[in-house]
Image (cartoon, rainbow, N blue to C red):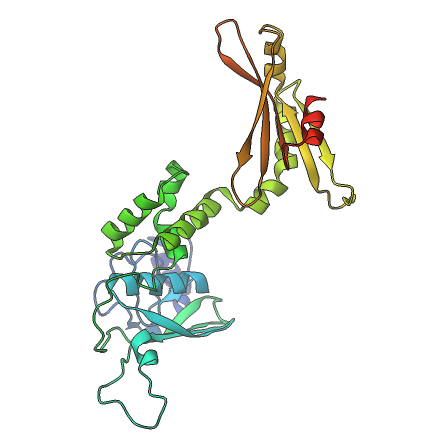
Amino acid sequence: MFQEDRRNSTAGSSAYVPRGMAFFSDLGSIDDDDDIEEEDGLERIVTFTEENNNIRLHMRFESKQQLSRAVRMWSINHNREFRVIESKSNTWFAKCKSSIERTPSTSTAPSYPLCDWCVRAVKKKTHEMWQITKWVNDHNCLDDMIRNNNTSLTASVISRHILRRVEDDPGLKVKNILSSVKENLKVDVSYKKAWYARRKAIELVFGSWEANFSELPQYLDALVQSNPGTVVEWSHHSDSSDRVKTFKYVFWAFGPAIEAFHMCRPVICVDGTHLRGEYKGKLLVAVTQDANNHILPIAYAIVDEKTISSWSWFME
């Protein structure tokens, strides 16, 4: 009997799953109401997928972040708002925003029913996934449909929406984000929220400012290893230690540019520009011209300010 069950279960799958642990990782469309059902006395398992943002009772999520994001997108698509009532390490509970705002502070009952919409999920110890244990699919509140700046559409959700566009164009303009959100999600958001969404998307794609600056030594060391003749110099603050070093200035010049300088005009021009981002500073650059009057950058430096001290260190 065991061998027969094993042959049947492995016929369409490369891995054997015992009959008592039925798991459906690919269910296709889950638009029907019978997606969550019992089969042979066992609960049929449905795992949430980003491609199909449907939510059902007993649905599983890989993390609380994925659960929260899914509920937010569901609310945005249905033009509704909600508030998180409870968010703990093993429990997550949210209710319709109108049912919270209209809860009377006195014993006098309201003349209209409060909205029943809510969702509760817990983290199961058996499979370490978040699973919906209560799901009211429909809103019965009397609120008008939300039109502008839906609070369910946070900057984090928008950042996921524009992620691929930021990958292609890190300089994506905020006005383009506003129009994209309006066209695709049918929601008006503030300029500030769109700006923060772009910032979050850039961090998701390229990493945070702190992480990138902390990797600067490894990056410059890789440049030295891959470009023979490249020169890198550091100037650290006096309070730096062997374990933690805070740089004051950093200089680098590519080996091929140093070699090319010998065939250029013996004139060097220097200038500096502002660094924009979380960490302010100045970028100093030294350039020259070749025989065709083309600009050749020779050396670079990151400093705190354009002062006599920083310029002197750069020129040395």
